[in-house]
Length: 80
Image (tube, rainbow, N blue to C red; front, side, top):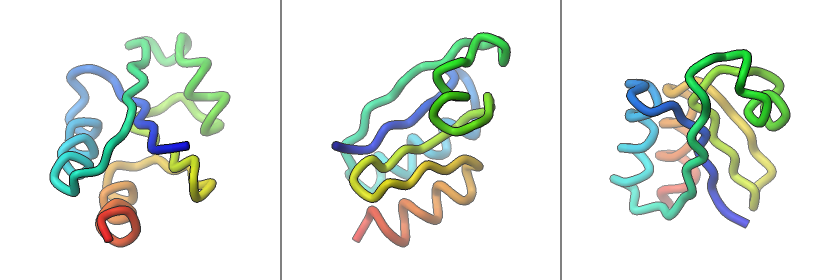
């Protein structure tokens, strides 16, 4: 059980989440996704959509998107 980040290489929103996790010293696993939305079946299966970033907190049963929401979740829940 842990934290999984679905991200696209070069995506500034994904970088924002990566930086928030790193700054909070949170261990996580990154699943790199395909550049084409139509090839992101794993992200769709997990989150119901094909956009990234997506954060999955397996321990708490939380799956979320939108870098701003994820950053707030990291700060308010995971970084404590």
